[in-house]
Length: 335
Image (cartoon, rainbow, N blue to C red; front, top):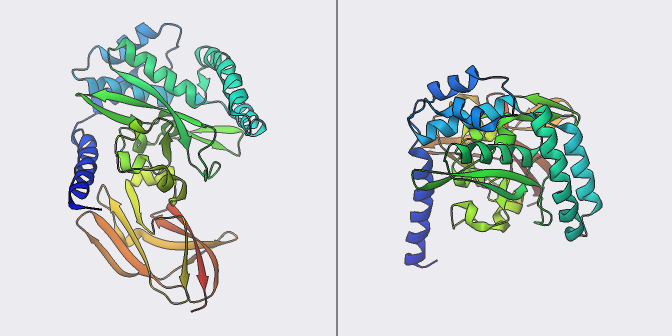
């Protein structure tokens, strides 16, 4: 990369990170309390709901926070819909035109279920966020693309499988995912409400670890590309809670020799306790810890090395406190 392109890339990266840090010190207590005050309200009158959530708040970001928090904490994921869409996506994986036609028709059923029962899937969450923002005069878009998770560990960008939102605040765009903020599916059959604030106005580089839009402009960072998304380490909801971005190894799958030093490096967007960091693998229900050497936590980066002394294939997990935040598959060969 020549110097000009290098400085442009750094400029875009710094700009993306600065976007989110603008709101870092805003106290959202009043916005969150406003959402809580209107817990359980119905969806039969969206203009009235938007008014209740926003009219006493002075800034657009606080208004959006109240809308976002209310949606995440009052709308439940619909396991039946999720199962039906997943089944249809697999059935029509080789016929994208047929799938998109079916999906457009099914959206009407999904929206009707949302308004009646306050249960939905990702498209419904994104739709409701956009509608409430429109009423509150906040510019917001539905973003369709690819969501990467333990259930959808995407290696090829084929059929779109997820939706989220971009919102314009203070003349800049930000990304968020109300679906994954609201909770998760247990055994594909039961929705567990578990609010995760990490998906609210997320750093674009972190967001792109498990979100890739079908329109590249919604990456909000021109340095991000599809190949990095499909090959990168697997991250989880807890990764967003801890606000940690995997930097090295760059890909989920990598190969080293026995006793070769393996470097792990992460960008940290908030203070972390290095005493609660572990690198582990699972053997059944048991955890086995790998040694952590040369641990450094400085200038917003955490790094350490480890050695694997035996040949084999290893699923290696970075653990912070009680949370798994990144997963790698490491093949170790004889030297």
